Image 1 (spheres, rainbow, N blue to C red):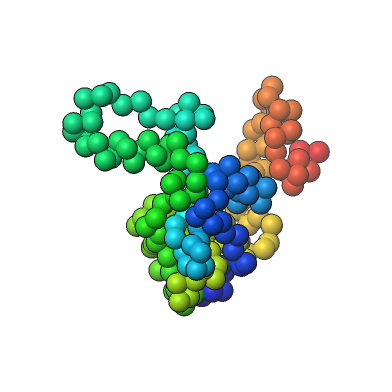
Image 2: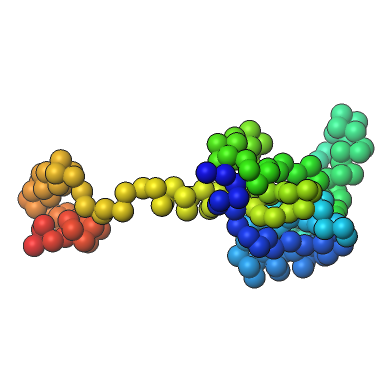
Length: 190
C-alpha cells in the first residue's frame, strides 16, 4: 500500500499571507489538526499545526526566559521565539522545513518519517504541489479495515469472563461491576 492509497484529498490549505486567526478558525471549523501552507505559486511553503498555537501571547503561555539566557542562546533564537509567539501572519508562525512524501511512498516509509521526525502529518507532494496528506487518523482507518470484524470472543475469553463473574456474584460490589460490564457480560449475569 502506498501514500496515494490512503492520503486525504482534497487537502485544505492556507496561504502564507493569511492571518493566524484565519488559520485557527479554519482548523476549528474543519476539525483538522494542521494546515499545509502554500505560496503564491501553489507550492508547499510550510505547515501550521495545533502545536504552533501552544506558546502564544494571547493565551499567556509565551515562554518567560531570564534575560541572561540571551547571552547563551543568542539574540536570534529569542527573537525567533518572540515572532512565533506573537506573529500575526501564518508565514511568521508556520514550520518551514516540512517533511513530505511522494505519492508512491510505502506506508512503512510514511510511518518511518512520522516516527523519525516526531510528526503527526505528512504532506504528499507531486512536482512540489500538495496532492494529499497522510495523518495518523488515515493510518488508523487502514488498521481498522484490516482488523477482524468479529466481535465475538474466543472460547477461552468466555471462560475467563464466567469465572470472574462467578466470583463477583458473591461480592457486595457485583452490581457495580454489572453496570460497567459489556452487554454480552451483562447477559451472563442475568
